[in-house]
Image (tube, rainbow, N blue to C red; front, side, top):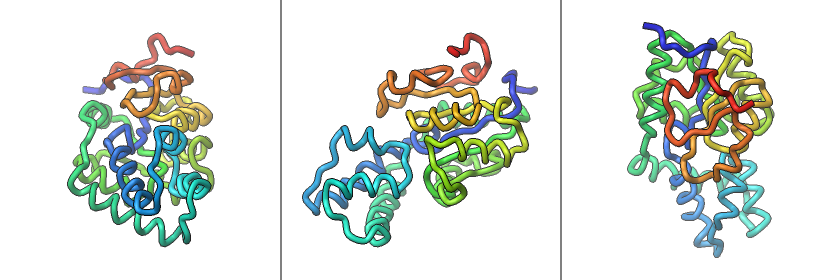
Length: 220
């Protein structure tokens, strides 16, 4: 039975949407920044959530000397991977919606500011690998979210026009990226981004369901 979601494809964000990795990332950065004498603040979190490594590094480098960005990334990555193995939690609502739309015959992509390898690890843990047609990772684009390139590339990989795609996001920069690319966008509240910051999404929900992807009562 085909899932009744008008449109041709669905593109999911990864971190914070499919998997609760944002707290893991926060703790990994704090693990490395703490010994240097800096404790990340709530303001730091809002400024960096959904951003690629280079942007986050540049943000913290204005607050404390971090040295070589490549060496520093290795430290953060090591702490993140250690925590990822033991602390990863999946968001059941998004995982089930992805399964449902894929079972209904709609192609699915993931567009992330993280590396493709990271997205693949998340999909493997969620047992979603075989259901995802295309992945857009940080290394696949020149311009990261909030630029529309990640979502434009995801739609191109699925061979679907952006206006026929739905996007599922959880951050302000992600919603901006998807909307700028022309996708109808559902934002899921995960507790780390205020609802007001996601108001430019077509729809904002507390818990994701397949019906949220339907076009009834879009906000814009």
